[in-house]
Image 1 (cartoon, rainbow, N blue to C red):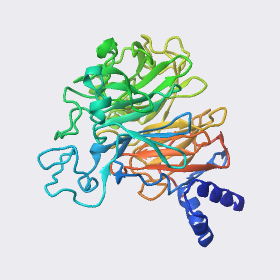
Image 2 (cartoon, rainbow, N blue to C red; image 1 turned 30 degrees about the horizontal axis):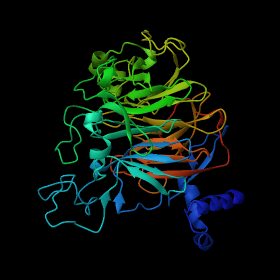
Image 3 (cartoon, rainbow, N blue to C red; image 1 turned 30 degrees about the vertical axis):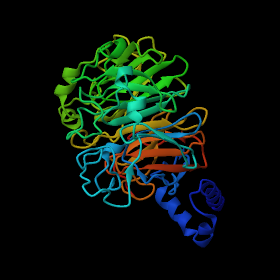
Image 4 (cartoon, rainbow, N blue to C red; image 1 turned 120 degrees about the vertical axis):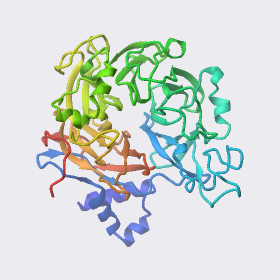
Length: 481
């Protein structure tokens, strides 16, 4: 244990987390970090990585910037951490210094500023920010909080529409930055920062790393259409409140979790945006939006005996691709994750699998994530984000829970729970509305929060790189101490 503590001190000091003299003065700082922010509820028959919060990550932002809700977070292949900030979720006191962007004595957010700034801090940060692993800000651009950026970089005449609610960011193997949005309607009440008024956020945008616009897929719909193939700009599919995306570097296919309005995984060509395929729960295609809407919330429907819903419930919140070709989907509205095989010839094509037969329509497996948790609109639901450990076999599956405020450590081979990281709260290493989970090449975990959480955190890995052994077949539930 002493060697681990010493190693942690070196790691945190190198990242600027704790000054060396502070550690010398109070060894209890590290002891408390280990005790309060590490893995708990560990299986006695399993081996998992250790983690500890780096409470000083990231470095303070320049220009008196402050973050709003974090709609997206992703660590790219350069080990740079990209976050997708929602400046329009700032409250009037959070943006007390901000006087720009509006008219009639109001700032861009619509808050009255008759006498100028209300306080010495703060300003809303741009929507896209890039950090290194030490927490240094490398780039920031985009969105209504970046003065003049929309007019110069996101022109409607070129097909660019900025979403009204930022949601989901991904950086592919060619350094393209993909973003989406889940604004169901224009901001109400509208402000100078409302970015479009035609309908919902039904699109994905593609930029380079400096924020130069390259392509839009989709448009601004007014209702779900989970089987649409060409209703968007330039004959691309029309999405409806997409949440997440990933590009397969081997095939150049873009997979989109679509999303808060539609109930599918959409597959398109990452160069052209043109439709390739789509699938719903258990690999089903077409998707029955009407039946899914009529079923209502997960728990009341389950109480009627519908324990294996043959559809994704909104939101379909994440899509991740493992190195072995397995596709993982966060079916947050059903408190579950589902696994698919990208190499299946049936996946994305017309296919019927209402009973969830493994091996049919590309479906592989599913796992309930704290499956007795209420879902939208009563509670957020559970499976909000997931990602993989960085060992060769990606043996750990880290699944974030948006209602129970924790990350479950699963053995990816058997989908059993081996431990947990994080609890509900507002201290370092705790979560309020955990929203995103991503990892750098060293296996360190980065997280993001929405609602009033409005922050990003880093957890430093130590010890094991991967996961092994057995645990609980039931993921989630009250921890018995």
